[in-house]
Image 1 (cartoon, rainbow, N blue to C red):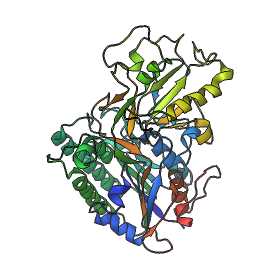
Image 2 (cartoon, rainbow, N blue to C red):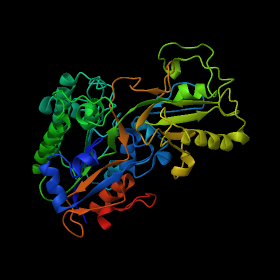
Image 3 (cartoon, rainbow, N blue to C red):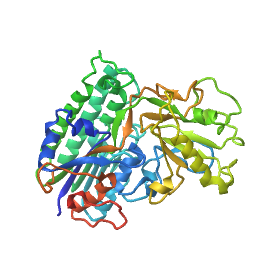
Length: 461
């Protein structure tokens, strides 16, 4: 095989809205499914935008990348964690590998591409770009060309953690329209053998509008103009995909993918508040308002464990000889992790029912653990709750997020659709993994697959 490949990335596109019996009206995606292959695509641990897109495009897991979330510890101090940008990804990504074989690439909006790196073709960096004044293209002069011919680049929507639905919905539509407009210009005007784009709008939509569209959500509001927000948005997104497909011709393999899915969120679990209650985290100065853990006066000589917030929890142990004021003896490290896992996984909710918590050791789920992994990765109640890292809460459960409005959590299954035929038209595939995408692209393009990639081409099944 030696075909061109177009990858359309839809951050957070969710199987229940695309595949299931109550899926939305999306004739263009349905047409791809009917002639090709499709299925649920299992994300990485954790199923988070960063590192999931880097995993997909490198074929390596988060431990191999040394990237465990948007922010990561850069040393064993107690300072704030650092954001992971393109310079954090040391492994080659698809566009690096394909460029190395002399083929042209075009990359648009994929997370962790800022600052943009040289490629054999062009790149427009993704939503972590710091602002419109940044140099967000490669080559740098591409920015001016795009501004002149495709308009101002919309990197993301500001303040998407809001329930000002009327304003946000319009801005999300503008974001998606802008991204596909840029894609259309690049597809028509630039030479490419591999084209990949990522649209972030669905992710923001799910986080802001889930309560209006899901009667099972604890904050469901049925009498609003947004009760059809999901299906309306997905339908318009499908139309944009159809227009893009009409511009690429028939000699192209199309893949539509998402990095993870989404699900209703029932609230937050205050991980550090719980650790204080358990006597594992101590403050020198109490707080009486909601306060970031980074801004609290922690008594490290008495603290054994602390955690970070997010859609999952990262748990850190204060180990003697590792952290500056560590207190857990190194020889007790493993037994202490086991004790924490038992406490976490035996936790009950207010109603006395056992929560479906899961605490994982990075060394047991990754092939390697580069850089500084968390000591435990925790999902609260099967991702029904996100992790709140702040202190000053009255309870360990919170009905609202501590960093702004949020209605949904991420889920493990995203989507995969391709127009490449399988054993039969419209074939549903099973056991697909996010690490399969990179070898699948290379296989379609007739390029050698690096031996160290753990995934395998989907098209060879």
